[in-house]
Image (cartoon, rainbow, N blue to C red; front, side, top):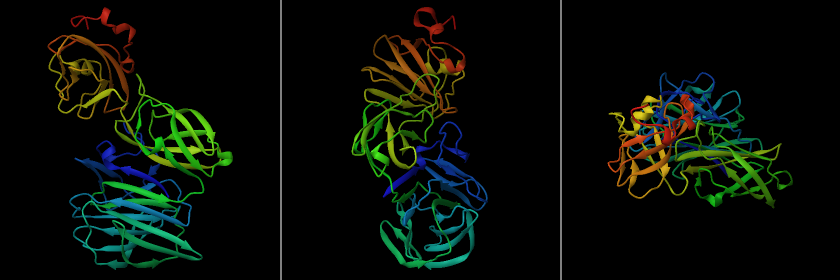
Length: 394
């Protein structure tokens, strides 16, 4: 079955979290009907309710096969308030399973316009488990729509029959409780069986192998992603549904997701589509650091130059650079070096998701002497070369 997974810890903390906004630019999900917005918070980050009584996110990929499922992963410890996993139709009506530490059970309710509605249709007295995966599965057999609940693969209660809804979408819901992961699972007519042989994909990777089934003439014409700045090119179909493609790298002035990040790839033959999810990580031979309480003390500290150019140095801004023995950018905004050298680095602004390129020369004390780059702030690379820039002159 195809699986689309969204891990809360891969998203940027926000309250409320607005789908599609920078820096994540998340697509493929929506707040349905009368539901309220959600938030991302904590360490590790979790998905929860921002306000109101029903925060709901719907995965907007239609689940069109006879067997579909939506899943949530509970945090550790289990929240004292309740969370839900739902299957709903195009009008955002359907059924959900609700559980939580204080309820100590699993209950099925109706969903109306994206929110919980009415009284419990069924109750099973089973304790929710920390870190458990809760699955709500629907199977169509003839005229019957049968629903099942699973916790870590173990079935809870009897099969529940309800033929009212033609559920085609999976959703997660919070009524004050926390969720660490949300996923949907289905069996489409077309599938992407693997990309990169199931291994993490690196930024800028080329000749990434893929295998597919069921597409017209076994030919893929385009591959898109749900992450701004992550694009696919040079698609080569090698026969039998297999092929390769190249992935874009980060570059100056372009938005790019924080790494590592979970990316959903959509393959198409021009008529049909199928999706697969894989983690995107930093390319080999590079290092990274995430700012935490960076202090722009003076112009001998690297983050001072960022701050002066209007790049956010708030917690979460990231610096990437070619791994160099004896050198590192530090989470406090400074640098560490055992000798004088010049490093070309990329900075991802936590507030915008934009990347900027910097050429940094440091002395043996590990302090910034020259910095270059930042086309996004109106400064050109050519105007801030090492040869033409002094500390006192900027």
